[in-house]
Amino acid sequence: MDWFVLKKIVSNYLQPLSIAVESLASGLILLGLSTWGAKSGKRSRLRRWLRHTGLAFLIMATMFLYLCSTASVAEALAYSLERQYPPMKEDSEDFRALDPEFIVVLAGGWRVGENAPVTSRVLPPTETRVIEGVRLAALFPKARLAFTGIPREVESMADLAKLMGVAPDRILLESRSRDTDDHPKFLKPILGESSFLLVTSGMQLPRAVSLFRGAGLDPVPMPTDLWSYPDFLARSPYQWDRLVPKASYLEMTDVALHEILGRLYSNLRGDAADEVRRPAVVEL
Image (cartoon, rainbow, N blue to C red; front, side, top):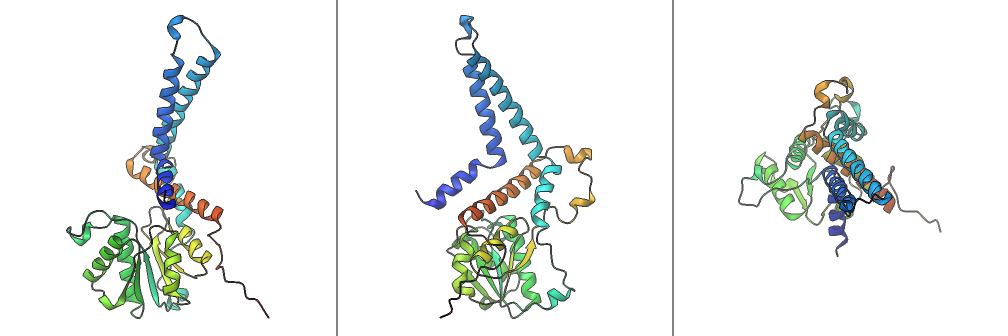
């Protein structure tokens, strides 16, 4: 089996909703097994253990799903990622000193085929990233826009950018990357030593930056699609409305945990780096 496919299958089973469903199913199975042979009137330690363990699974799964669906948990996880690379103010000295040759925009998923309107072909995170890339392209007219992802994603991203007025000769497509791990690998031959801005969702940026640095590239982080930063600390986590479960908060938790687990996976593989990883120079 393709390692990429296996990785995607495993990640699907590690999503909050999947974990909750798996735990609920396990609890129900254990409770069912605890009733096996109960009609005989015999009580055993095994049946008691199965019953208690099954109930524990049901309670923990319910509490886990509830907590993952609340603003207090979801926004805390999102903020922990987004605060690592806050947006750069346009009037700051660091921003004015930038002179990028490329603006790299990571794809974030597609929705329907090419016969649909261009605004319906990509998922909201991808659309937001493209809009931010186009905004930066207007501020840095010498920079080229580089979209990276699978073919249908980058083609739709390019169409969306052209719809917003970007000249076709300023757009570059890298269409071999299937996920975040692939982007630096396939972009490195294109970017070389060029300076570039890295545009992606704020929660994905820490993992993306570490992978690019691990590949020896030096991106300037440009976050977009922010969910929690900077307002999280200004709100009390104990307000009643922040304890009401919502599907949108479950989605936020899902994205945050995906990035946290993805970063852990990259660290274990040795692909990530906090500083730019340069090739060793051997003096003769």
